[in-house]
Image 1: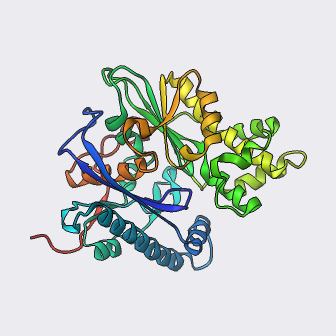
Image 2: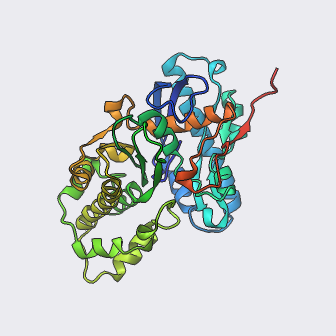
Image 3: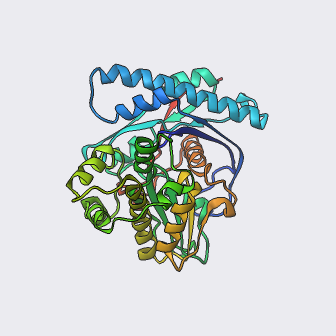
Length: 371
């Protein structure tokens, strides 16, 4: 999968126990390989440009989908080589694509991918367009990962929060498995998408390694308060967001309205504080007893420190301690969604997305006729 950070394509090879359901939490899968390839700079720039309307965008989007699908195929090849598994042993590829529009309130979400091209290149069935069925049922189409988190990370006696720090941060709030309380999940707001863009603009680096640049800055309290006044943060779940709202234009507009000139390093520190504060609020309001973090932000030491401060007294750690590399969790989630689709099982949680009910998610692209 490739997320809102538009930095890499991550893939995981996952084995599943057959027909496991939402209630068989804590078991049912084994991640056997993980691979990642950076998205080439020219393709990254085009995918980011396609987030906004532009000239000849339909043709450009089709070409970008082809190029992205080729990168997906390269990651699949890497996984097969690393594991020694033949392509014929793989039931399906769960391929998310690159989100370029997400407007569930208007009834659509668009993820760029050419699934037929990917199926042809790999010889493996592709499960794609995984958000559309939930949106068609009145849901947000996002986040989808909480259903997976509920099966894998839920605990019988502990209130857990699972935080994905990708381009956009989202939380899965998991009540103890012994309770009938519903799982709740939603996008809390921006994370790496704004951090990486601001870092690239002012340092030339693709990201702020370990948050070291931000660590040397000071949080601008007035700027943070202005950002927290963004109406999205006051919405009750179910809710989802993305680059349609939290993009470079949003950042530039809010900075232009802020009196004075905040130094770039202080802006970076304040962006980290925004992410940590909004995630921390969700975890505290839920009463999380433990918080587990996955996604690229789990490698940002300063982000993890600030998140721990905002989630206290609940301890914060990566999902590595639960047996899944934090970089592999989201890719494993889309493998799980593909397995659900192949088995004809629901992949969404209506308590998370607000859909009218459970739905089988995804469409199939077959590489050849079935015997």
